Figure 1 (cartoon, rainbow, N blue to C red):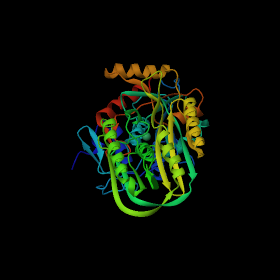
Figure 2: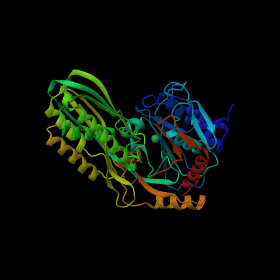
Figure 3: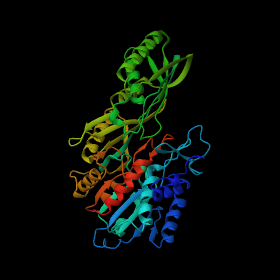
Length: 480
Ligand SMILES: [Zn+2]
C-alpha cells in the first residue's frame, strides 16, 4: 500500500481532494459532484444554491473582526477532462480516479488526475470548512462544464454576487499570478468541390511525431503543424508534378496543435520519380527546420501501387493546397507589455474528400481588437479562393491593461512569505475570469494555483509541496 492522499499535509486540503477524485465528474456529468457540494454546505449549515447548469454557490459569513472587509469571491470549476491511456484499468468518466503518491507528486494510474481543477475546489472547501482561518464574507462559486467551452460560467447568474474581489483557483503554475487571458474564435472554411477520376500511382502520405500540444500554452514553442506541412508539400509537388487528391485528414481537436495528417494522392506514372524526390527533399528540409521543436517528425510515403481513384478536380486541389499553405499557423503577434504571445492561430482540423473540403482555424488573442483583425485576414484569404467562412465558438478575452492594487499586494505578499518571486502575467489560454469580468463591472480578479504538469493527459501530476504553499498563500490573501 502506498501513502494515502488524505494523510498528506495540508490534511484539510488533501482530504477534500481525495474525496473529489472518487466522484466521476467529466464535463457534462456534474450532477454527482454538485450534490456533493450542496451536501457539504448543508452539513455545515452554510447557505448554498445550485442553478440549472449545476453551478453551485456556497456562502460563508465573515469571521469575527472581518465583517467590514469586502466580500471575496473564490472560484473553481468542478468538471475535469477524462482521458485514459491503453494501460488504464479504470474509466475516469465512470470510476474513481486511481491516485497514488510518487515523491512530491500525486499522480493517477493511466488516467487524468483531475487536479485541474479538483485541487482548486479542495482549497476553497478547506476555507469553507475551517473555523480557524480569518476571512471576510466568502462567495464560493463552483462552475460546471469549464473544459468544454466555459458553459457553466457563461450561464451563471452573477446578479446575486456582492463581491468585487475575485480569486480564481485554476492556474497551473505557482510562480505565476495571472491577471489576464486570451479570448478566441474558430473560423470554419468550407467549400464544395468538383469530383473526377484519376489514374496513376496511389501514395499515402502520413506525417506523424510532431510535438503538438495545447494551442494556447504551447504555441510559443514554434513547433510545426502537420496540416500546414502537408499543404506546403502538396503546393510544392503541384509545381512540377501532375497530382490529384483523394482524401486528407489532419487534427482532431481545435485546441490542439495538429501533430498528425494523412493525404492520399494519385500521381501520373511518368511523374512518380520526381514526386518521390520532392518528398525526400521536403522531408530533409523539415527535419532541419524543425529539428529542435519536433525531433520526432516523420513523413511516410507509402506506394500503394497503380490504380484509379475518385479525386477532387485539379482546380479545387489548387485552392485547397494554396489555402493550407498560406493560412497562418503559430504566433501572429507578441504582447507589447510582457514577453508573452498576444495573438496566434492554429490550423487545427482539416478534412478533404473528392466533393468538399473543410479547414478549421482556431484563433486566440489577449486583445479582442487584434483577434478581430486576424479573423478578417483569414476571411479575406477564404474569399480570395471563393471558399465560404463561418465564425463559431467566440469567447471573450480577459483584458487587463493595468495591474490592480490587489494583484500588486498579492505579489508582495507571496514574495515576503516565501522569499521567492511570483511573476504577474497574462496567459494565452482561456480562463473563466474572462466571463466573470465581463459580467461583473469593476471586478478585480486574479488567478492562482499550485504547480501541475501534463494536465488533460494521463501524465497529469500535482505537486504536494506547491499545494501546501498555495494553501498558506490563500489564507493570507483572504486577509488583504
Ligand atoms: Zn482548469
